Length: 384
Ligand code: ATP
Ligand code: MG
View 1 (cartoon, rainbow, N blue to C red):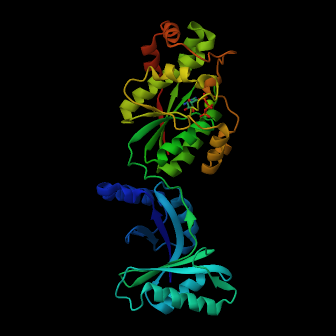
View 2 (cartoon, rainbow, N blue to C red):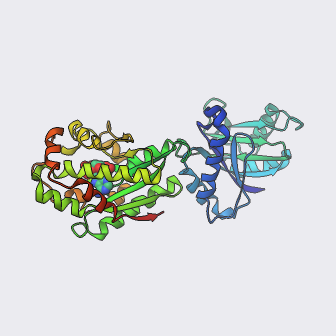
């Protein structure tokens, strides 16, 4: 009896002709998530089975694979010889000793002497004999004991099902540039888009020495957490110190954030060209703060020429975003106190509804191209 982990995937089967490609990307992502754990991965029809690992690491394998987008559910089970006595021995290990259950068999090997109904009846009957507090409930059982008789003379036996992240395999929906601040929202935005299969690259702006190293370490930690879902992630770090100083010196105080956002977008678009990213992703939510009005978004979109700006959180309440941030494990890091570059030279009364013509007039005082290029020359990249 050998311990195995069964991985079930979702949505991928919807992809018709592309199915082979989706499965290949998915399998690569599963393999990447298991880096450092000895194992073998097999793919009998419709699922993946991880085998031949050190049995003490089964929980860790489940924990890692749960986060791989495309994974629907997981189970820890056993692989045994396809023989009723051997199957029952494994069933006895995973079955509950009380409450309700049903046995469900999938007979891939049509030559197996019993059909699935007979297997269910025999295994269920033996369980009832051995555990008098168990009852069968075929409609709403507390536990489903599953048996999968395979064509190669083995059978898989498994019980509990762990829900996984769902979504689509990262790498099947292009690549995006995520504006990653140290706040609560942007990691959630990145997670949501990655979950739809998009590979994510991060871009963080700092205003060192006005912002400190802790702020940067915090963003690196957020990128590291995100990378456990996305199978690795590159973080670009760019200084906007000189841009902020130039705005502060030459433009109306209340336009600091509006103008800074436009620079962020320009820099993001240039990095998209460089890295092959096909969109910019932000954590903005309509009306959440003064700069996140539709006018603010119009002003920042106006400088982006060739890629769409995705704002997956645009219709979310802060409480909903916080819930998600807790669920994906970024919340505790996000709430550590820090100075974002947006809080440097923060105006007392930021412009809430910037008019594009006025923004452009204020910006005309700056050498936009030189400031953008200078910021890009500070680019550092970190890989997670
Ligand atoms: P977050 O919690 O994501 O920081 P927020 O509610 O603090 O969002 P803002 O600070 O207005 O909102 O930022 C809006 C969006 O702009 C962020 O979600 C992020 O995508 C981007 N952004 C803001 N500051 C930075 C930064 N320093 N580096 C990279 N992107 C940033
Ligand atoms: Mg912020």
